[in-house]
Image 1 (cartoon, helix red, strand yellow):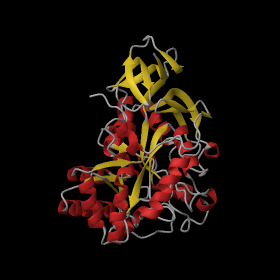
Image 2 (tube, helix red, strand yellow):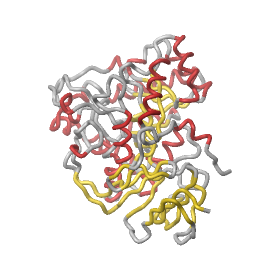
Image 3 (cartoon, rainbow, N blue to C red):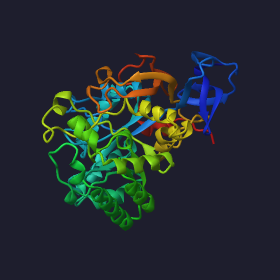
Image 4 (cartoon, rainbow, N blue to C red):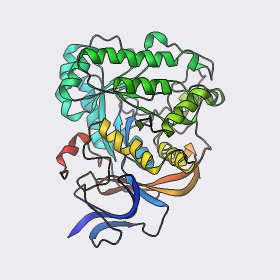
Length: 436
């Protein structure tokens, strides 16, 4: 028997680092054996003699802005998924706040087509909250091709919001929420002080508001994204919501915004140091469910505008895993925890029951990292069109060197090996065999 792909070397299995042979055929892991297991393959990566290289379950970013459509000058489905592959992500789930917004069937079909034609890693799609009831039901015709709905602050007062919650419950779709109560936020033109007018209270009130709506319809699956405080983490947990945060909320604070200005402007804003520190301690303690990049690309020219005029958003696909690996080296998290927050739990949140682990029957996605590789973050080297980051010149220890998607090398050691359109919609994952 000749299989498609074999990896030999260190891997994460059931939370432990072990030497093994991972066998992938027809897109699925069909065996995990000892390091010397005999098997012939079309492609083999053998890192048995390199102790610093480890295969993690393929990383999943459940919050990515690939832009595209009329915002393709910021990013598009091809450049964004190249950035994902280089950053170690094998799956990204795209957000609907593009132009036109993906909150109607026509734009959703356009977006799905662009993803299908251009993505080089696998992908999912969230839809926006529609403007009217008729469009809600038109969008539900695509229920088998989407992950769920994204709720932004501007959606909170839409009459269709309760309908979206009800239909999400009926159709087992995810509701992912940007938690900032719109009546409690306003812009602040002074770098370093946006946290004063986009407050933690706005975040907490929003979570409570989502809880009240959810209670009325029997609690659909709700995920609170990019939380910025330990208060929000514990409140979301109290309601039974899943939640994530992003590396910039763990590592940067409002002084970074003061120093780097619009390069560190993001919504919700960076918080003062005590708030950041408490959230980081929660992360170290295993309280945070998942890490998402919130990859939000804008052009460097846009980010260099006066602070009050510059758009909010930080690109993260190419920095997130190196930053997490650096946290591992600092002793803040284990490799098992790292694997859970970027692979296993995100798969559970978005409803993939055969992804996020290295085990027979699971999708053959791997993120290969070199724990010893050190480098300085240089945004000019990004694959993303967004050539900027508040992490510029940050020294990282640990780097993704390979992304394997369904048993195929998409990216390895600085070279891409997949063409536009290789990525598939993750809603098709159920067609792959899962043991048991």
